[in-house]
Length: 90
Image (cartoon, rainbow, N blue to C red; front, side, top):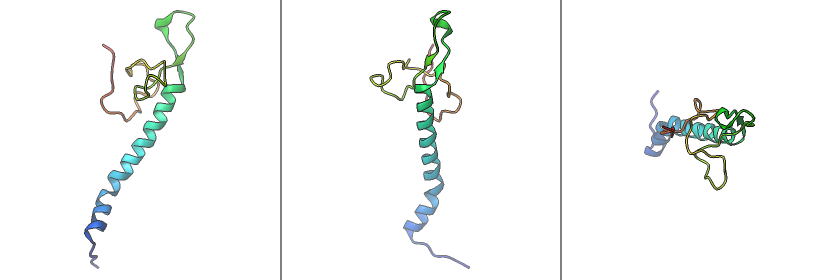
C-alpha cells in the first residue's frame, strides 16, 4: 500500500523526532536548573564550619540567584545537564 502525503504532512512526520528531543531537553534543563539552584553542596574551600549551600545555575540571572558562581565546576547535576558550552573555572 502506498500513501501520498502533502508537503506539510511529510514535514511534520520528518521533524517529529527532533521536536520531541528538543521538548525533552527543555524539560531536563528546567529540572537541572531547579536542582542546581536549590540543592545544597559542600563548600570545603569556604572553611571547616561552612554549611553547604546551593551552587546555582549559570542559566539563572545573577539578580535572581545570588549564589550563582558563573561556572559549572561543582554543580550537582553537571553530568546530566544538557547545556552545551558549559563554563568552567580556570
